[in-house]
Image 1 (cartoon, rainbow, N blue to C red):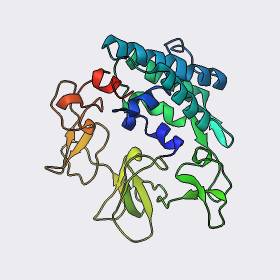
Image 2 (cartoon, rainbow, N blue to C red):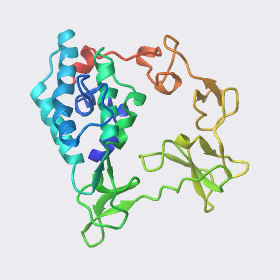
Image 3 (cartoon, rainbow, N blue to C red):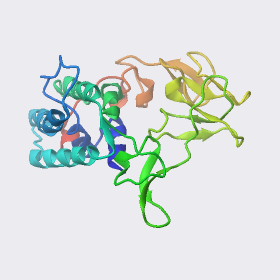
Image 4 (tube, rainbow, N blue to C red):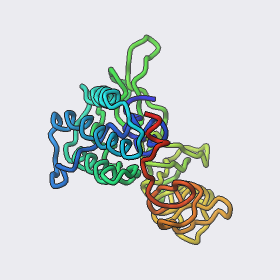
Amino acid sequence: MTTRASLKLLSALLIGPWLLVVACTGSSDGDDDDEAFVDEAKFRERFPAQLCGQIAQCCHSVDVPIDEPNCLEQAAVLVEDLAGTGVDYDGAAAAACLRGYATPLARCVVPSATDLSPCNTVYTGHVPAGEACQSSAECVDGTFCEADIDGNLVCVGYGLPEPGVEGDACTDSCFGSYGGFESCIVVSADVGQGCYENDGLECAWDTLTCQPSPGVGEPCEYYCAPGAYCDYSTFTCQALIPDGGACAFDEQCERDSCPDGECGEAKIGASLCSGF
């Protein structure tokens, strides 16, 4: 997995031993709560130290100490890989990313996908497909740095369909937003656009056009509009479940978190700490 993949999928990796790597890559101790922008040098300095400190405190509270120097080292390496030539830094996203980690971790709660969403745009690549690169972090969304037929490193795309708008002819329904390691379901082999979940669209089978995702009570094929999830036992959209309700997977919950079969916050406990 590329380093940029680790940043894009922070919330998905917050389980088991991966907690160490990603939890050490995007927070502060709360001093930035009122800041709208964080200087890059300050971000890179505080990124490892403050968050690894928070994680260490949580794990000490359950009597499972972590290897904090190892946490600091891994965090520093990841940030160094992400912050290089060919990438743009967003200080506002960095400030929001730091808060996204700090607030839940202050309560020893695993940050949710919503908490960490600003982290996806702290560093973004701007090298287009076909141009020379040193790492995938430099490449624009949807492309990766790989060797071409001559052995030269260039940004390479994998053919994600271009995002369509409502009414466009479509070929795919895609989970996520364009360029962010989505999975797409091919609906038609004809030429057309992709309909992306984060745009509130899916590719309708009957019209082969991008249409709004269905809402609560409506039939669904893949995903639903915000506030609902697709129940694959009935293929209808159901309202997201509030904290305390029974669940089988994260996507059913309002908080996007289903620890131990119940919607709610996932606490950092001994089982997670032992993977550090």
